Image 1: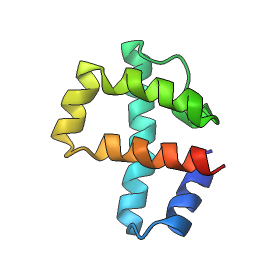
Image 2: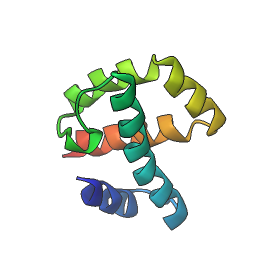
Image 3: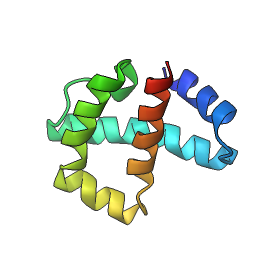
Length: 91
């Protein structure tokens, strides 16, 4: 799914290659952190439903660890998740 997400970003946004790379890696980083925190129980790239992802996103964004990391990262992680949500909705 990561490859499809990357291709979707390339085709549907005007993001630079660097930003696309950062956002695709951010989804992996969020997965690792939130699995470790016990917030989610499966990898985000294994989620194929926008409805399921929306529910997970609410749990993730309400997590203090995520909020601190997202704030420090200038909201890159929440922006990456918003892009992934739009990608899933488009499928």
